[in-house]
Image (cartoon, rainbow, N blue to C red; front, side, top):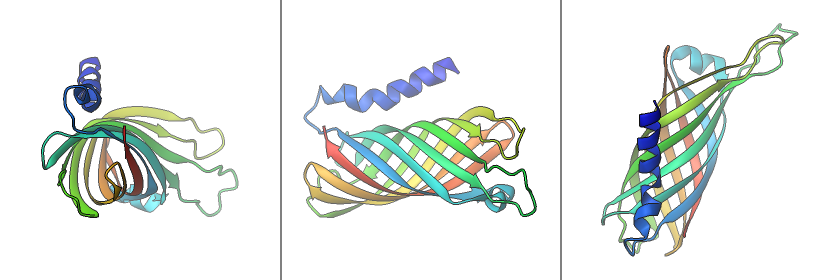
Length: 189
């Protein structure tokens, strides 16, 4: 696990390291949006829509490819069961560290620029207590990200993004998957 984390951190930090060697800009971004529980079925029926936010860094490496890495916090809230007087809320949260590849037009001067994204990393899952006296639990596993979006270039050094991504969070007992819809702001460093 330590070897995997070391490789992942190197992959995530590569855009910053390589920026000293080329003239291509590095973009830093912040994103926030809503989460939708997707699968398995119990996850979709027991949890409800909530929120997520994150930070990312990305760097163009060719005319059509950017690499990057990011940190994302995603939250899912347990649906309130009827008839439980000792219910105190609860939910499931994921903190993901992932590297990604972004297929996009890095040389365009157009205002709108579509993209596709795929990423791989690690996540830490945290289950919030659901009932009085229940215990919290944490687990970690592999995070897989597939997404598509649209960048709106405000200027050559600022852009907004709208992204829809499917996140697979593998856990020892199976995977818990969610759909994230995010709005982001990115600026050149």
